[in-house]
Length: 377
Image 1 (cartoon, rainbow, N blue to C red):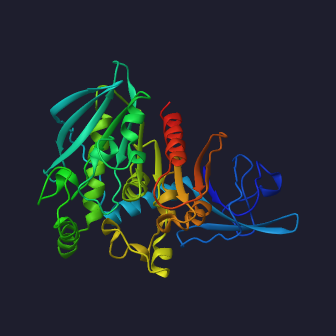
Image 2 (cartoon, one colour):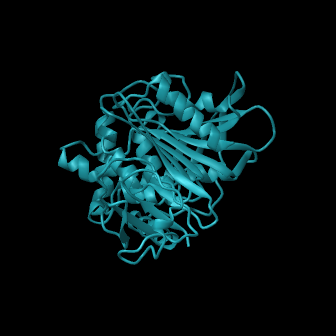
Image 3 (cartoon, rainbow, N blue to C red):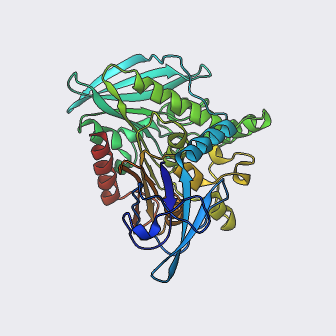
């Protein structure tokens, strides 16, 4: 049986003292399962969800071990999908090429493709040279209160150079899709292009409010658009559908956490500057991004539930010590730590906590690029 375990304390590998029935109070872990643990602090908490807890003694110290079977994770993923009304369309996604630019080592195509609702999604598609099957990464742009920047920042044409993952990945032989999210850059109803407009904030706020009034959410729209992008990549003639990942920072990282958790077509995911629980944000009076305003969600789930749903796929959380948007990422990582299989194959959550603030640095950019490239290979 596959098992998902989170605990505090030092590393132990197949410790025979942990063998037993994982879902029996006072028991522990079956000997056929491999467990990898990292030192993540002393406090472990989790919102209740059909979880078996086991407490065992190792050398006099008591360890709280949370165990989730793979069946439980699949059920959790399905329940969250139903709560968010998330589904994947079976319809093929075609796109229109509006412009092709030859760059150093890749082509940049300006394209558009239909959303599941029928509106057009502008995007850049970066294609490396060659005709073999490539890995692909969907890169979601940040927010940064700059709704005039979306896909162009990801592709290094405007904005923060440490957001320009598109060219860096394409030069590594990875197909990149960088769409505009709803209300950003060319998906603003009041203005297109990369110039700011005084109506940008109101338009975004209204997109959230109008959906709430209809019994819908902005997250529902964001998730469906992101799933449409994965559908486009999955059927592209140059893409290996078994090597598709997703990446984002800040607002883009939020999209990664929600969509990547629920869409198993995504084989690896990196969420930077986004791992912070609703519980922490509300307790510390922090802002909630508009797409994350989901009525009733926190009555049942929080971010650790989403991270657990990545199992058994690879996921990297990147946080920083002075970043309010990822302040309790250690706690999230501790609660969602590892997946192990009876065959001894370990799929795991990795967490990199940097010193600094919310904005990416050269070191974090390089580390993310290295990790994504390694996963794509």
